[in-house]
Image 1 (cartoon, rainbow, N blue to C red):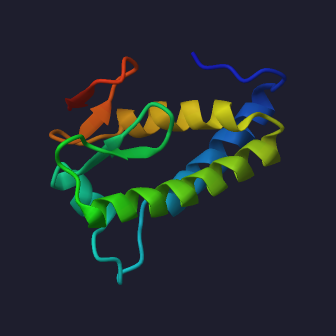
Image 2: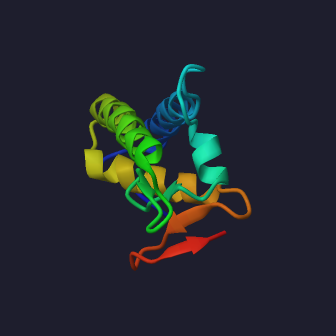
Length: 122
């Protein structure tokens, strides 16, 4: 079990709620986006990484996917920092927890990077 130093049960509950809200904000993109995160995942262009950010799948990416990676990761970093600040914990601990949760929610056929840095399909 992942444990955050200095947090009691109530603090962990607040952290999990804040984290879930932050993640739900990150999933949808604006309708005007040329390529959505869901489309990029379905096409095998991007995948989740254990650090809580998305990455371009080697050999599969294109300019639209690269722009999407930058856009999504900037939003995630801001949300993760907000959660960390609100809960008195580190950005790194939020990133790791996010990575675990996001990889755990992948659909069959979607890509992720394992702890060893290898890209795999669920």
